[in-house]
Amino acid sequence: MDRYLAMQLLPIFLFGVGAFTSVVLAIDSLFELLRKVVESGLPINIALKVFVLKLPYVMVYSFPMSTLLATLMTYSKLSSDSELIALRGCGVSVYRMVLTAVLLSGLVTGMTYIFNEYISPAANYEATTTLERALKSDQPSFKQQNIYYPEYREEKTKDGGTSRLLARLFYADEFDGKKMKGLTIIDRSQAGVNQIVVSESAQWNAYKQVWDFYNGTIYLVAPDRSYRNILRFEHQQLQLPNTPLIVAKNSRDYEEMNIAQSLQQLEIEKLAGNPQRIKKLEVRIQQKIAFPFICIIFGLVGSAMGTIPQRTGRGRSFGVSIIVIFIYYLLLSVCGALAQAEILSPFVGAWLPNLCGLGMGILILMQFSQK
Image (cartoon, rainbow, N blue to C red):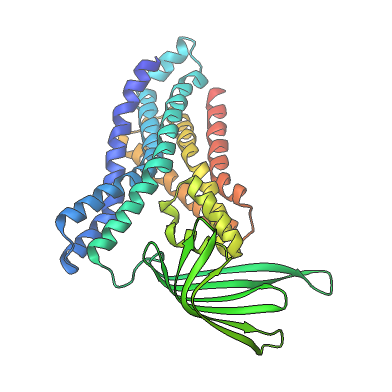
């Protein structure tokens, strides 16, 4: 029975992966790449390379949708052909029938995790850098120009509370992979000693764990905001954190980072003290962990709905799949927004859609199994 069900599920799953990937990729990337080929002169071979590199990212989302489609269509067909009734007559419970779909969905979950963690982020990042190099954009990415990094500290106020103050502000015009150029640093990390560093260039000295600044000026500012001293230099070493260098080297969008890179970026954001970016990154990390498990949820929901006795065609099953997918992604977006707004915790915001889907699948399965 397991082998028979698996052979029924596999072709529809592969069809779903191809169909959903083609549709989403056409909407998300193909038209935009064609526009760049026509309007910006993007070479065809580069456009094809970027198109292929975008495939893993889209396939990550097509796996759960294909799982739902395959289980719903397969079990609906078996139900309409009375094959499920025959199995129940042989003493096979509904739970045992659905178990096959859930186990196969578990394999798809593992495949989704591998794509989402190891393949998709690297391919997405390579696609972005390839496109930028080909177009020679006049607006380089964050890691190349306008490196901005604030660092905050907390101080106790007279009423016993805490206030968040700027401790250090690091800005550089550009970064060429080795040196920062056009730097301005406002350092207020030590009480009573404020300094402004303006430098032509700077490079991180990994051996001494200091910054080497070249051709610049240090302005020392007294607590009353008046200039205390001015120091001009050709070469000066300062003990400042190397976090801006890490930010410049590893600046990526959320879709271009795996969980480990996201956690590393979260530590950097915590040092910078930007609550909005911290919360957004915490939500994205939880969503990255939770998302692959939707394959199991969709496998359970699809097979449970398919076992309901009814005469349905493939067109209706496909329509039901689209509705369920739309509801899930709508719920995912709403819960993510509520988590970023701190109405829900990042964990609840990421896992609540899965829990709702699991509850619906179990409820449908229990109701039908009692008939």
